[in-house]
Length: 66
Image (tube, rainbow, N blue to C red):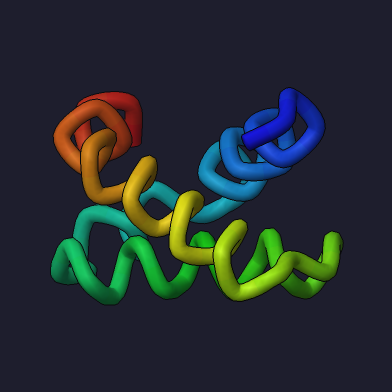
């Protein structure tokens, strides 16, 4: 995953309302962020899978920051 995609991931998380992130299941949280990133930057299927895997590993951090 390149730095540009990482920045877009965290920008999407930062821009999302905290209450909406906290109310989502892990799967829905990951899907929401992936959808936002993909709407800004087209990703291959492999890149989307990589982003999803990364986000699943960071769900606790995302909720702590929200």
